[in-house]
Image (spheres, rainbow, N blue to C red):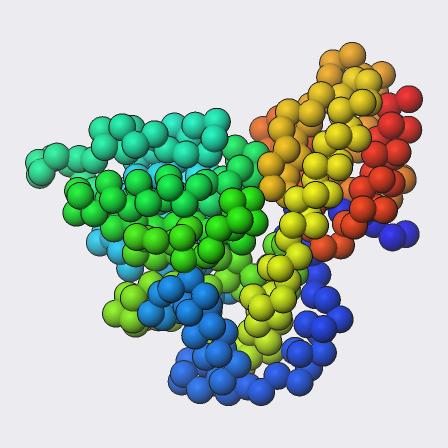
Length: 345
């Protein structure tokens, strides 16, 4: 069966062009700094966002953890959202491996952290307290519905962090989607941030990998932390080759995913027993009402029989997240709408 997989954009797989590039990649030993394809990916990524240097890492989670451990000594504190990926979905790595304490503030409906909340979370100079070292935001904000944060807001956080002597990190796993949403240049969305991670997988379709960006000095230290975490890869050019296509080609088509998400939300909004909660960038959230003639488990089973993969959002039996990507085109969106309609008929 040909599956239409809406569980996440992480399920996207390499394009034919990526597979060909991977097969032909020129490689070397990246731990020795000798893989030319990895070097090109790191340099191109840094130039695209206006940073001095980049570091190819295995995942966004690893990239975020490396950034936090490079910025923050053990026993210090990072201010982040209570729905932030680094706090909720990264297995407590900052604490377990970095000895870093998270200080969470509320993620607003628009995905931002209120500036006053950030200020109030900054610790005073008192030896009873952990030292606040870092502020981190997420763009797009996954758990707020995939909403994009504006360049203006990012600049405000950057100025706040600088004013208080703090470092500023952006978890930009889907920052290319934010750039599309605001029609913004990538350096605008990174301006003032000391570090930034972005994913090459997800909507960009590379099979694996993220890039961490920062100053040359920061990346030099981050490379050491990557090694400490077991993240040193050898002939990684076979992965970086797909990353180069993601970086230079796939990001230019993300507007299609946003349009397909809007189409899906519109189609679902007309179906009884279902309530669309939000649509932003490539995300659609909906709620299966109590009035539905079937249970959530039965709903998912019927969709699966129709070739559609969907699952409840973590912690909610009736809340569903649909994530659009390269492998779900307009015709497949229309098939999903009909499959949902049929499941609830």
